Amino acid sequence: MHICMAVFGDLRFDYRVFREAQCLRQAGHHISIVSSSFSSAPLQEWGAFDLHLIPIDRSRSLRISYPAFWKQARQLLLAARADVYHAHDLDALWPAAFAARRRDVPLVYDSHEFWTEQSSLVDRPLIRNFWALLERRLIGRTHRIITVSTSIARALQERYALEQVAVVRNPPLYRPPVQSDRIRTELQLAAGRPVVVYQGGFLTDNGLAEQIDAVAGLQEDFAFVLIGDGPMEGALKKQVHHRNLKHQVYFISRVPFGELHSYTCSADLGLCLIKGTGKSFYYSLPNKLFEYLMAGLPVLASDFPDMRAVVEESGAGTVANPQDSGEIREKIRSLLFDPNQRQLYRQAALTAAQHYNWEQEAPKLLDLYAGL
Image (cartoon, rainbow, N blue to C red; front, side, top):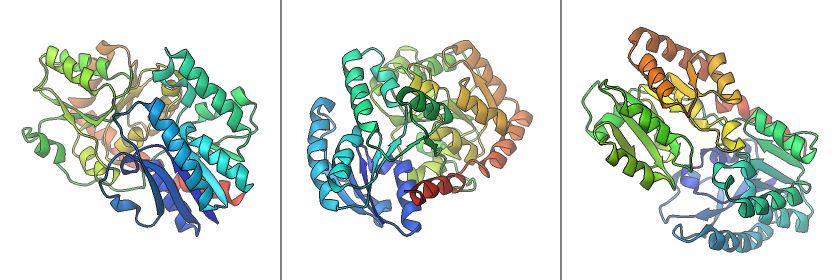
């Protein structure tokens, strides 16, 4: 069948969309994608798909960008004449629902997070209410709903009285760890200097400030490296400057997903300490957690239900209160500077990666489409 996906995001960094599109294409479906585009850089990994890109000026307000995207996306989605429309997240659901209704074909809603409970909406009731009303209005038009964690699936079921929400978690395609010193080379760090890594978005109140505070109290010689970008990047860099941490905390710009594994493999400990500001964070099961396991990194994660379950099942690390800088500091020290324990965690992570990978999740997506 022809499956047309709708995405508001940067495809260069959206590994979930790529994995799902590739999985469905390999199963024999034709995949077209209507997506925003924030850069003129070529999309090298996406050549197998029929892409329709809508240029968006990242410097403009989302109050302008969203309506501009929705207007053009509706026309492109309708013109695709697809057999199924697949909306990635709530900000792409409106035009996809319009096209599916006009074409009288199924609509799949793929909620990558608990959208209306994002931290950025916690103190913005008017905007939060807009998204909540939009989701409530449109979710009844969907034929299948997918999300990334058990807790988010349960929350959506309870809120909208849904019979079923499929859970398709967000691990990467399985890859063995590679020998890499990419982070140290790029940042000109001393050979053998331990590296603690965070990779992902620099989002509103998501716990990175507390992690930087935790690092400030550690006397041991190591580097804390943040790979990514986002609205809090300027504030975080100011914090590093004011705390005089420029020789301990480093930033690397967002890395395309095809290159990320080599960066992750060059670290020694992975942080997945997201604050519970908004239920979306509290219920999250971030892809970075699985990327750390696949690179053989010990993991320090938030003591929240879904992340705790993976860490405990894998035995590849431990959890902490993401708002307690003192606890984070002590957990980093115990995970990073005990070489024997670190090796045990590394072996546990590599073993867990055999289970937590996209190859284990893909059949769930294929079963969902087989039932349409």
